[in-house]
Length: 160
Image (cartoon, rainbow, N blue to C red; front, side, top):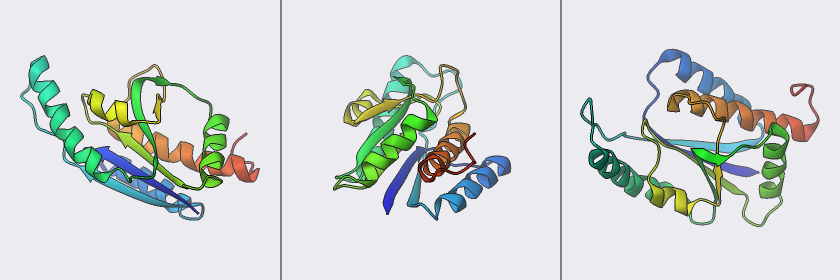
């Protein structure tokens, strides 16, 4: 069974996000072992300077790297990443399931994204869209797309 780890900067607080994510996490339980690690987002002033933002991202990067499994295929979610279809994500899931290292690790940054050092660690930089989403919503969308990927692989009517 595939092991999927989500490393997310920032904690879900809004009930609608937590309930939506919990629903997809429950559904994914039949297809993979899902582990979600929430890390604290570094607090910044209301109007941070570029230097303050970079320092915060560097501090978050130290925590992120601690939680990345050594033998995982690492995918970072970032706006400049590659966009793929749901079918392509399903194929990637299949490749990882059939590899000798069936571990996927997704990293979702906080409000200001991810440090370049984290992006450099990635096997794939992935973008959900050219549009901007709150990072909490990105977690829900990613969970739904993972579920959709497994349903595509099994030939379900979920993906029409």
